[in-house]
Amino acid sequence: MPTNLAMPGIAAGRLPADQIAVGFSDLEPPLSDHEALVAADRCYFCYDAPCTTACPTAIDIPLFIRQIATGTPEAAARTIFAQNVLGGICARVCPTETLCEEACVRETAEGEPVQIGRLQRYATDRLILGDVHPFTRAPETGRKIAVVGAGPAGLACAHRLAMHGHSVTIYDARPKGGGLNEYGIAAYKATNDFAQAELDWLMKIGGITVEYDRRLGADFTLTELQQSHDAVFLGMGLAGVNEMTLAGDHEGIETAVDWIATMRQSPDKTDVPVGREVVVIGGGMTAVDAAVQSKLLGADTVTIAYRRDKAAMPASGYEQDLAASKGVRLLFNLTPKTVASGSITLARTANRDGKLVETGEQVTLTADQVLLAIGQTLAGAPEVLALDGGKIAVTGPGRSSVPGIWAGGDCAAGGEDLTVTAVAEGRDAAEDIHANLMGGA
Ligand SMILES: Cc1cc2nc3c(=O)[nH]c(=O)nc-3n(C[C@H](O)[C@H](O)[C@H](O)COP(=O)(O)OP(=O)(O)OC[C@H]3O[C@@H](n4cnc5c(N)ncnc54)[C@H](O)[C@@H]3O)c2cc1C
Ligand code: SF4
Image (cartoon, rainbow, N blue to C red; front, side, top):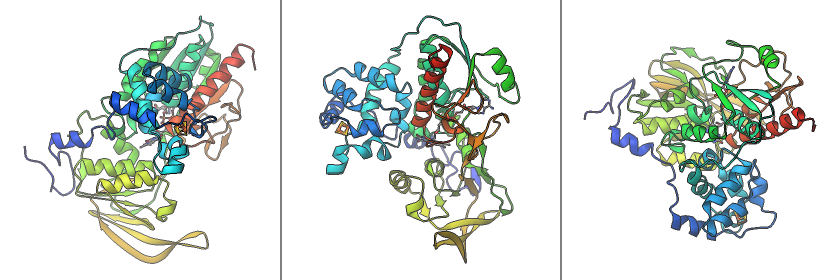
């Protein structure tokens, strides 16, 4: 079948379907039974394990690895899910290189950690893909809780509340649940529609209803939620994007999160348009994901242009290496100035006395597609809530400035914008809501 490999501009089908399928397959394949036993055997089962301390959900990592080592991976999965009900997606997307695996004593001693993430996937897949839900619901309490957002924070919160016997309704603005697991995470980290499989599995707890295509602020108000529910949890993520004003012809410019969201919804990616020469502006996980996936779709050249130097880049060394290994070029100390049809001009920058300044020199790159990955912002949060640094202000386990309303995940102030952090915050808010409703707090 002919392909559009050399076609200038933005076009779909630059590579044959089978090549696209290979590129978008699992970034790291699952461990076999034998590989899992070998990997588990490297664990020292440390007392006061640093890996557990480094995990935002505090999974008992030595315990679950021991359970794998002794041939009981289902028990290992239960250990993981007790702390992190989205342990399946976290096993795939967590930046383990800066969390548990960075803290692993074998990383410190030998530069090679126990493969905690891959072992977690080995265990959790047993129950999720085997369709076994290990939790049962407490008797109905008669309490009703509204959760806004079916992303990791909202799902973790809803599941924990349902376990305690409460009735939960989740409202999500989009037609599908999972939040960025479904619309953001790189496709090669969550293959085979995993986000939906995990969502369906999680719902087996019972007591949770989801209403899709229902946006807070447009289809209903916070006051209405307060009137019809005993508590409200906001896990609405960051639905806005930072603005960037660039002079010139803006055709071919898009935000990376929008481009990724559309791309993620294409089943085989053969219909996803991509530029022949792509420039991604930014330096975080989103920039790397947009760049790598552009390359996997057949873009000829893909360049990430980041305004600061390599050391300051928010994407981890692992992610930078991943981008480079896929043929993405990383350029540093460049900030965009103007765009024209087929090119982008950037100014060189330098760090002078701790301040980022333009040096006066300019660089023009060929670009028929420019993807902006310069950060997301809170959008549509009810005005009654106090903000902190542009996010919903919270104290303790997600208590907002308004009694009866909790918030967690990316939309809440503090913490890192990671899937696992969102899960931890959703879970902890649920425990606090439960204690409040049952008179324990
Ligand atoms: C491109 C990209 C790649 C990423 N890759 C990784 C990764 O590899 N590893 C990692 O750990 N983290 C990654 N992250 C970060 C991670 O996805 C987020 O930290 C995490 O999804 C936050 O979960 P959340 O539940 O707070 O928000 P979200 O996942 O954003 O979910 C929020 C939900 O709320 C809904 N919503 C928003 N506004 C409203 C409203 N007004 N009314 C009703 N519903 C609403 C949305 O539709 C959405 O479903 C990535 C982020 C991006 C953008
Ligand atoms: S730090 Fe490493 S070796 Fe120690 S318990 Fe954790 S995974 Fe095992």
